[in-house]
Amino acid sequence: MLEFGDLGDERGKLVVLEGEKDIPFAIRRVFYIYGSDPEVVRGRHANRESEFVLVNVAGQSKVRVTDGEREDIVALTRPMQGIYLPRMVWKDMYGFSPDSVLLVLASTHYDPAEYIRNYDTYLQIVRGGAG
Ligand code: TYD
Image (cartoon, rainbow, N blue to C red; front, side, top):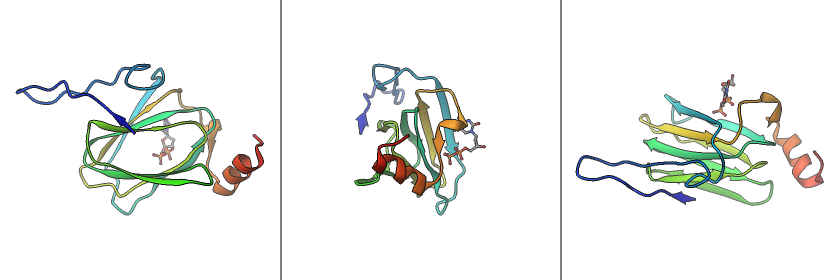
């Protein structure tokens, strides 16, 4: 988990995310997910190359992360809190509140070829050491 500083004052709050400082990689891509219903599960993939940081800048969601052995479930509930996801972890995002805006910072430009979208394939790769 990453905890970001609050540069706010009496005018309101301000959170700064600088690549290679607050974020442990150079940021090459930013996207955000909103308007997902609470019962929706997004993600369901692993990435061979991309690292991510996820921040719920508004609202709340949950992230389930597994490396094929351990599993962590993290609730993103505050704009000053982020989760760092290294390469080759499987992640699901779900439990989106109606006001959820999930900001995603990525270390790569988008390349669909680096996505692993089949969980059995993912397990074979991480358990077999192949790929
Ligand atoms: P998808 O990976 O399914 O989203 P999530 O992981 O949040 O469930 O992406 C949804 C669509 O958006 C899909 O058609 C691919 C496209 N997309 C891009 O073109 N560039 C991107 O950086 C991302 C993340 C998705």
